[in-house]
Length: 449
Image (cartoon, rainbow, N blue to C red; front, side, top):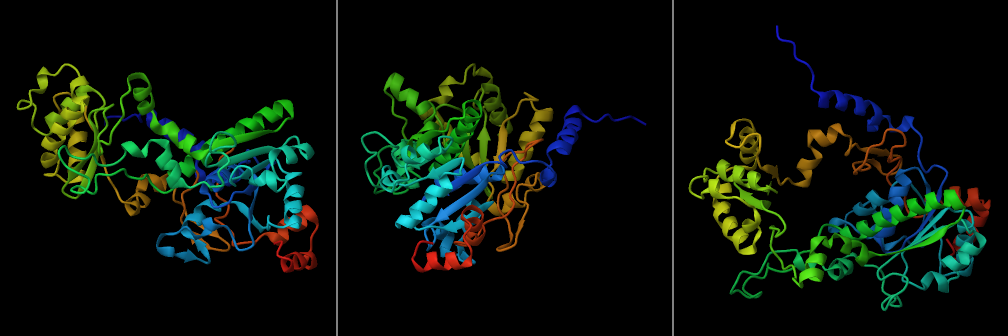
């Protein structure tokens, strides 16, 4: 009987799973378990996303909202509320203690100052100058707590021509200002007008992608500042403008214009930097096709049975196919061909071609475009624990995306999903101020909490 030896990749998979399996996260320490974070973000998911990343790493995170709750709690499809909380905030309220403090009151601001004096990190998203006017700016708070790391995630940054605008940070504004959305969406066919083809307009990205970007960069800046503080003992201010953060994703478009004066126009699902690279229709939806080099493009032409007709054996470079006119031409030729198959059939064809095709093992990348429900039912994602339900003591069993990375020693984790407005007032104010029920009732009566 033939002896089958397990491949090296399978041995590695078993080894690394034993070290970073999410099911064992609670057996391991948290990287930031000695860090206190104040999240004073207002009307912006950027700050909430930023503090979520730190809270997943174990930081004790106190989310400060106005007495009626922050506006972001209302963000939800169809206005659906789960126990008074919008579905979007269930994702970004994770691992945070929720308190209410009215920053419009002098007593409320004094409470924040007292908390900031004990904190390691403060995150805020108010228009530039607002926190300073309240006596809660970096200059003021760092005097009493020089180790404080003060992160401001705002629309236009702390300086510059527009920093004085009192406009809150809006994701859609940052998407529009970044330059990315100009080149995102269906192209206007030659000879047509926007009135004739109303769908050929710039297209926004998914839910608050710009906020998530500035929140991520803000968290990276905070982690860098924490390391610097461990060496010097000094805190610092971090200034992130959301539209600048999202602009980072313009990638080659910025250099194309700077170097050659070329503006990257809308090009549908195609991309002038790559070929084959885009979405194509199938019987049951669509697939993403990725070639990236000449041999892979040739392989897909072979899969479609057009090797001889399109004279693929004569092609020597991918450069001509990256031109806009060429991509539009071949897209029109390919659409009716890919539409003859289901997404699964095209995927299988690519896999089989890698085994026996003319250019094997070279083949094209084919990926089915799947709806969210199918993603959540994907056995691969389930096996990696990304959609493991959280049994929250307040909100019940809730499915939310778990931390997006694994770690062998200090893994991130979701301990609870969210908390109602002011849920932790009693715990936090007793711990940090010694306030009992009588004092809390007094503050509530004065509109401070």
